[in-house]
Length: 292
Image (cartoon, rainbow, N blue to C red; front, side, top):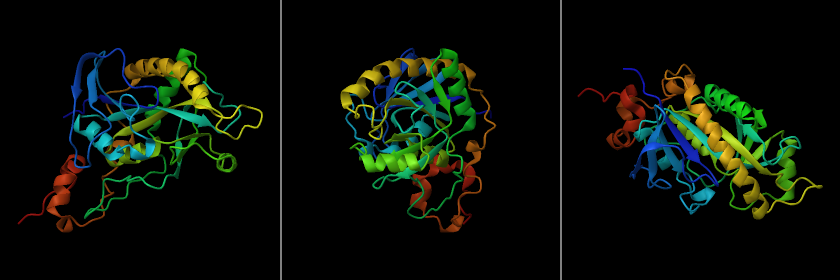
């Protein structure tokens, strides 16, 4: 049976709803990993089924460290999502990535400390390939749509995922620049890891709102300044998403869809029934119950 194109959208700071959807429904899910950030909003954008979730919850109630990324991605999978487009506000670590620019991220550096970021535990071990952490096919589509819109977009870049919720110190900001990183944010790496384990394609549209605190000739980052840039960015991000949807092919040819094919290391006969039940949605037929 051919796989249906179902697009998931993870909305970041400033993007708490998805305009232009028809056949709207609100879906609340319980997951084996706890509660998602909010109810999922499902609908259609043209002929494509879309599932939207604000990762911070409506009203921005969930801090970066408190986001239950496992429940969010599991819920997307449960609703049939095969691709996820993430929209996220970030700080710039490069002079040429100005506030208002977009970056289609293709690499991550992890600076988090307190976040679960795998589904595979308590009796099951899996090691997915993650050298290229985002789906190139989806990233190319986002970049093309942004260019068509006339938005300045940087195609490729490294995202430092810090813990938060505080912003960086000057020393940290300068350190990340010395590593060659391009932007800094608080949310996307865990989503990318979990999407890969769930065999869902994932790509990030990062919206630069400020120069973090490294820029000596630019005003230090303030919430007020970020919000001003964000308001403009969010309207453009919505249009980039709208233009991206018709470009997404129905059939996936990327390796994301087979990420678990050789990744499960645990002997099938040693996997507890509880783990099989908990991970059944993700494993599908990749694990057959041992014959009695």
